[in-house]
Amino acid sequence: MSRVLVVEDDVDAARMMAALVAEAGFTVATAQSLREARRHIALDPPELVLLDLQLPDGSGLSLFDDPQSIANTQVVLITGHASLETSIEALRLGAADYLIKPVTARQLEGILSRIIQPKALEAELQGLTDEWKRSGRFGHLWGRSTPMQRIYEQIARVSGTAVTVLITGESGTGKELVARTLHDLSRRRNAPFLAVNCGAISPQLIESEIFGHEKGSFTGAERQHQGFFERANGGTLFLDEVTEMPLALQVKLLRVLETGTFMRVGSTVVQETDVRLVAATNRDPMEAVKAGKLREDLFYRLNVFPIALPTLRERGGDVELLAEHFVAEVSSREGAVKTFSPGARAKLLRYRWPGNVRELRNVVQRNYVMTEGSVIGEEWLPVNGPEREAMSVALSGDELRIRIGTSMAEAERQLILATMRYYNHHKEQAAAVLGISLKTLYNRLKEYSAEEAAAALRQAEASSSAPD
Image (cartoon, helix red, strand yellow):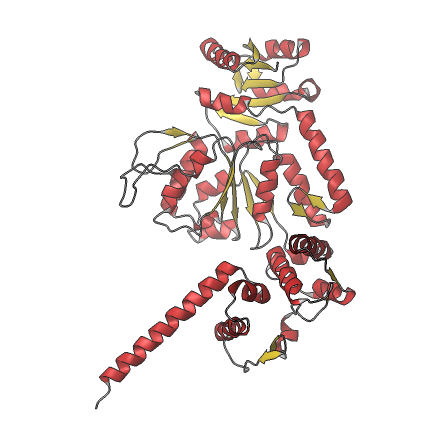
């Protein structure tokens, strides 16, 4: 049976926490000072220490002065208020989490459900490191380059804690994969991981989606709805493109980070949540603050542990490793093994990849579809700007020639519509050949349809107003 030590000088608070811990099936002891806590740890090391930050004989953080004594003990700080400084210091010293007074039964249940000995986490991270050295894979990520090694080190350092992480990087660099790897290596791995793109939800609906709503709280609210914070309870909530969140909602998000509480839309009942928050943006966060897109106080709350992802252009030989990984995935799914020719590998390395890893994955899938044999050549691989000017766009023998001076928007329109015609309006195949997602293709076709309808309406109006 796991043993828990409650270090708290408030006798009533210590007794309450000890009762809740015992009710959950753990053996429990209490201490009212650092001296007494050290004696308990020396005599019978616990798996978990619930440690008050302010004690009669000093700061609770002093317990970390002898790291060997708590080498296989998970430490959770108890503080009267959650400050940024406390979070950073706790992370630096090795605390796994912190609780804000008054501690509730639900908070304690969450902590107790996530007890994993530090040595077990260390062994798991060592296994991931061995796998990375062998195959180039670290969790959901792939790469052997120096910039990616730094990312792996950061993930390994922060994954075992509960601090908030802010991931930055260009679109397509793998921000959600970093968040998923953080979750899978954390003590919350058995609870939900939920991802929400703040830029993909209507501003009128995003509050309801994140915090939930009560039945009848607005037109169309026919039943109670649980938001992401409720559904992710105990786990990890990934807020992608957080700078796209409306400013009014950012205030409410800040409150959740500070108090661990929120209210559903249309409710006056305060809800508790036990969620580890990971946020991401493809903007420069400080520029977003200056532009009024991100509240400065929220930025500092999110930026407790920043992770800046490198572009694919900065990752050198990872291009070849990733291309091999993606083509192996497609080969396994489709049942026919295909590989890249030496010339194709060289061309992949020369390209600058403005769309990063996402673009590379789409390119690999498109070339797999377009290659009839088992060896993928150079024909359908992308080229950099100067090489592109003299090219026409070939489609399996047919050509679409675009005049110099055509706008990028019009050139894209012509290429998409011509590709659709060539493949008999088969959207999945056209999207694969074009190297775009099916959603993007649908959006473009919808835009073109609306433009054609508007043009037809203008022409009809002009004809009706023309003199007889």
